Amino acid sequence: MEEKEKLRQEGLRLLKEMPQTDKLQIEHRLAEHLFASFVWKDAKSIGLTMALPHEWDTTKLIQQAWLEKKRICVPLTIENRAMQFYHIESYNQLTNGAFSIKEPIADRCEPASKDTIDLIIVPGLLFDMSGYRIGYGGGYYDRYLTDYQNKTLSLAGRQQIKQSLPVEPLDLPVDHLLTDDGFLF
Image 1 (spheres, rainbow, N blue to C red):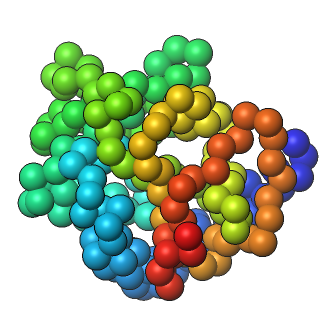
Image 2: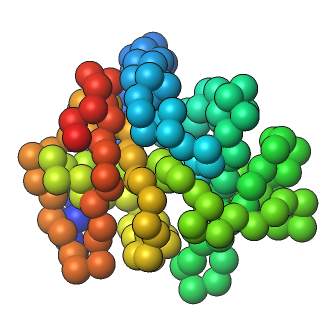
């Protein structure tokens, strides 16, 4: 666990210290690769987190999804370190939630069941070549994805990729890892 915490801090530092011009270039390439992919094109409903300032911006993804008439689902953290995704049609359906992340206002949105979300874009700080990731340590996504049957994908700058990461029994790999150089798998 201590090794994971050191890696978590490394990943967080890497993102927070990245020059804004580099971040914008990487975000542009990530979006370009994603929008051209079968994973994106096949998805009618996409689950993703509203990004924090140091994370890869997800607003461009949301805007493109809405242009393509895809449904966007955003998670709301609930008790027991769990999440429930909700369909949003407007940023007016969001408020500041846990950890300063924008979350849906439950009574203004329709809940999204797991089987209706075609693709979940899973956030993380570091990733390995097997699809495992280090996030913020809460386990929210690992718990949510336990019985999720559709596609998962993570976005990463090449600096966030490690050959391998420590893995615990409850950790789940993503199906696809997309970097600014393209899909690793």
